Structures are given as structure tokens and as C-alpha cells.
Image (tube, rainbow, N blue to C red; front, side, top):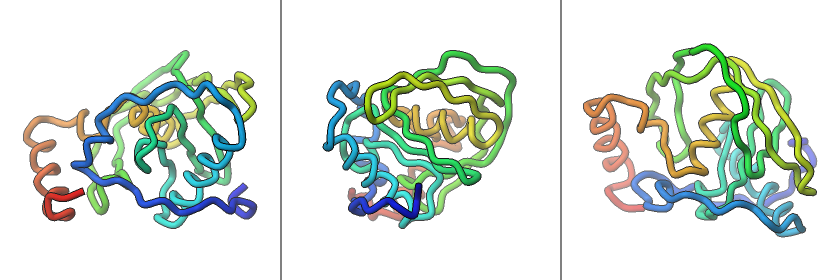
Length: 170
């Protein structure tokens, strides 16, 4: 899919931009506008070498995200977890926290139900890193950030580091 994507590269919002903590609205219109949003998400993700990107990260409060990992591309529209198993701990980063990484515990395996660009319901299963990527992007749609899983001390350290990176501006 990545070779045919011709979306516009949109600036990625970085912490502490308040849009990152807002809950997104469900997608209700499945049209060319949604297709453009998804292409823009893939294009913006690719230019920053990301694995996933959610609409709030480019300032759009819609429940839409993309993930691309291990040669597979996923479009997540109005996604929800329908099953999960096990636990894994691993390092996570986020395009909204450039250069910052932390260990986060998440389910080892998930099954999610989502919609495609036409509004059809589809189910994806992911394990390991794919599960982590699905859940990380889905969190963005609920205004939740990967630092929210960390201890207060670690979270505050990262917030200070991120504020230095952005000069306290967004």
C-alpha cells in the first residue's frame, strides 16, 4: 500500500499540544474526505519513519488511525478491542514525543473490530508488536498517551524532556 499513497504530509502535533488529550469523535461519513485523511496519515507517518499514526496527532479529532508493520498496512476506523490475552512489556515511542521512549506493559494479543474506508466491519488480530501498535494508536483516539501508563516520576521526567524539545510550545 505504501507505494501508491500520495497523501499530503501534515505536521505532527507534539506534546504538550492539548489536542493530544482530547477524545475523538466517531467517523460517521465514509467518503473521499475520509480516504484523504487516511492517505495523509500514511504519508505523514512514512516521512517520520513511524509505525502508526492517529488522526488527533495531525489535529483531527476523528476516530481514525493507521498502522504499518511487518509489511502489512491497517486502516482503523472507529476501532474497539473485542478480546485480549496475556501481557508483554516493551519499549514504545511516539511521533508526538520525538526521541523519547519508555517501557509500557500492554496485552500480548488483541482482536479488534474496526471499519474500513467503506464503513464495512472488519476484524484484525495482532500479537506482540502489532498488538502494541494497534493499542497505542487506539489510545490516541481516546486522548490517552503512552506516558499515562508510566509511574508519576517517569511521566513527569518525560513531560519535562518533551517540553524542552518543543521549547514549551506546540
